[in-house]
Amino acid sequence: MRLPHCHGVDVKACLLALWACIFTPQAVQACDDAITQPLSFVSLWNAAAAVRMGNLAQIDRLCGKADYSAECLQKALGTQAKLLPVYQSPGDSAFMGAILVRYVPGAGIETSYLDLDPALPGSRIMLDFRPDLFQRDDGYGPVYFHQTLLARQDGWFRIALPQVVKHTGWIRLADPRIVQLGKGDIVTYQDKGYVILKVGKDAITLRAEIPGDMVCNGIGGLPDGSEPKLTIPLKDAYDNTCHLLLAIRYPRGCP
Image (cartoon, rainbow, N blue to C red; front, side):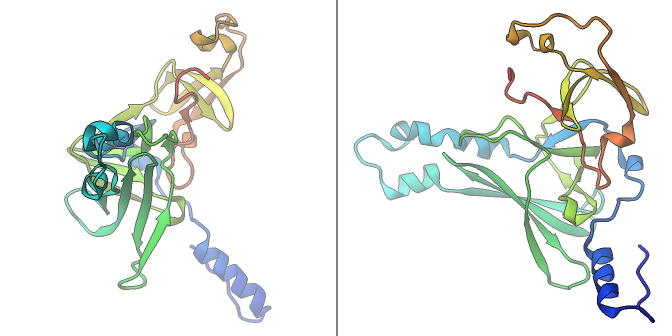
């Protein structure tokens, strides 16, 4: 990162420029080199904890209709938190931070990132963030609560962290749920709908979405080859902090 020189210039303007250099997210160098699991997301939620998300609808069965004891309500509906430590590389290397996932039955699943600032020993910065592939749930656990996956090694998974953090990290998962985009998937890219035609080693070919792509619509026809097509380099499917820019267009199925 190149910092401005303040000698002989307006000090206020230079300090503002210096602030921008330090606090504006910088591109992650060699982001494309980190991608060995392209067009993928991995779930951040714990399957066992997510089962409790439907407890509110089953409270009569769990606690009995006659009397809801405080102890039973707390056990059934209390918030449960799971911590995912984040490391610089696989194998329990340098600790970078942690992802905190909170499960609130009847309310939803929330996540935060606890960043450890290496420049300030002992510093802890809590950042709220929404996973890259996210479907807002109604308290019964989401179908999609996934973060961009870049690579995997045994039980370790390299993911994109919140943009402000400006780097990637490794987490360890025992029961990963991976979503990988591929041929035939309908995706959103740059706020437009596309169908993936081909995923190559270095590029992705898309065509414009048409109404007939969703069978449940009952309208439109099959593509006739005249639809606009778009080929993008694989690296352009990610932003400069390694977050995948393609997402499932209809996470709940039919629009």
